[in-house]
Image (cartoon, rainbow, N blue to C red; front, top):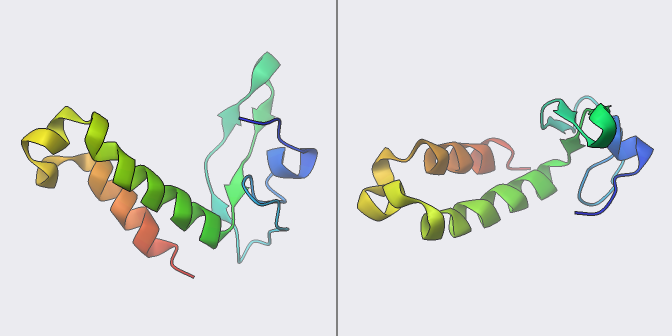
Length: 89
């Protein structure tokens, strides 16, 4: 992953496309601890968060034992689907 700009680390810009974010447009990705224990507050725009959730949802089943056995019981799969639907622009 590339190094984030200051605006991305503090949540003022999307971590993927660097679009400027507002309280109304931002999707909070949760506080993180970066290199040297620096706190970051990443956020994304709805389009990028949805695209990332859908991409991860599609790739998830290939590496998840629960999805191989019974995908309807996989919490991660359900959470990714919910996220993609919730942030639909």
